[in-house]
Length: 533
Image (cartoon, rainbow, N blue to C red):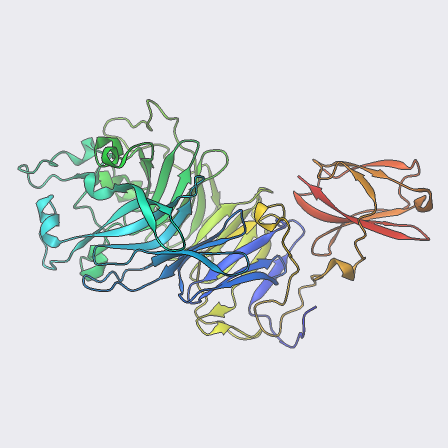
């Protein structure tokens, strides 16, 4: 149990923990920390990993129980890559915390940043900054300016890990190969911007035009892969767009028109078919496919005309035609609005100017991370907050309950249900909360605090889709049946039970996950874990 509850005011940790929340374990990698944590819904640590480097923003728990994370490294020489989201290294740790693989991407020409994506084939997609000199930029039609700064162009590479260190680049795509400009007709990439919506206008920018702000002219911040479509989605905060590119190409083909954009969404002014009034995305992050094939994205709302309000939105993609997403000549890519949004009514209480993310959970709820605030919360489809957590960890370690945690930013968080493959056969016994002087959230740390789990009840099928059969022995005639979730919260109760010795119970109202079923009679108590799929 918690060692103490001495704080007079709760400032960090779990504030709301409703039975309507998704049962599971949440992975968080505080931006200022070298630690990555897996916590349960009570905020108690189930596992943690230690690196020599601060996180390069993203971290993922893989199905084999290993942790794949980015890490921060400095570039060794000029030009220095020092934009927001600097990474430079990828690491993989075993469940037990051993470093089992790593690879550096930090030299004078390339530097990884923000996000990575594990592919089904075991390869990893990485976002790189690719440095091009000021002179190279002028040679492809960039307007001259007074800064003379280099241009960092986004490149997506697929690496095949080898051994304990390093890997081979087996595929790559660069935005530099897909530029259009309308300033110099003597150059081969000259054209009408609006007639080429699948290419990038080298002169489009919303930056300040100064040093690294102008160098990092696209500022990509997330990458996701759809194996069924063999497509990659990339989010560009500076363009206020997300893009879809074709992975079903060779590297050579990716550098040709075959590598032009399949789709883009959020800011039609970037390809001159709209203006600021038509803009739909505002410095967004974490664009990703969800199960129904649409796109979930955290729309930060920076410089949104209605006010600086954030939202989480679902965008329904148009139907693919002839291997690409259609667009009418002179028009923007459809749709013209979201199909779902949280909150439906924008409000100033929800705003994250940078980082942040969201994910759709198996029970239909949405897990949202307000990154700069270090605050994660889960909402139902009716916008009820059913779980929330304020990260206690800064660069100085975990705060003590009652203290302000300071700079506790998180890039994003992810939650996995108890049946996730990474947890099978693992010791998932929780420890203490991250914060000192843990607040009493009413969670029961061990199921033995209710009853000893004897697993001697005949239950079938188990796992179940919701209808279970309980085989009842004579000594349990007239039993009571109680079901608890794994936090120790009672979710179902039947007094007196059934008397036929072979009872069926309909549990379709429960969310997917594991539960404790307890049978009590006047003479005995028996219990067993059941799983609802």
